[in-house]
Length: 129
Image 1 (cartoon, rainbow, N blue to C red):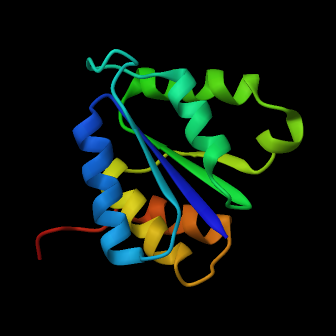
Image 2 (image 1 turned 90 degrees about the vertical axis):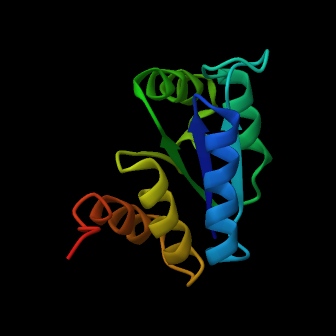
């Protein structure tokens, strides 16, 4: 099973996105990590690590909202044991739409690769017709 970690500079954005994914994807494990450790805007590498390690999923997709969230996620990957790091993927896709697409795809039992493809495709889907 594929799990998702959402890393945002805002606790509310991370949790709101997690709620959206849960609402449509059901049983997919989703962890929200938002804001700094003191509750301010920012990212918390220790919170990211705890979220990744707290999932029971076989593979983990990490979505990041802005630049320093990527740096924090990369730092966390460097701190993990190699065998754990092998099953974690940082996803270069829109935060909300990508996480939503990946979550819904994961709910069908799809592989991590298929979920990443769905997330990346979210970048090109037009909202207006």
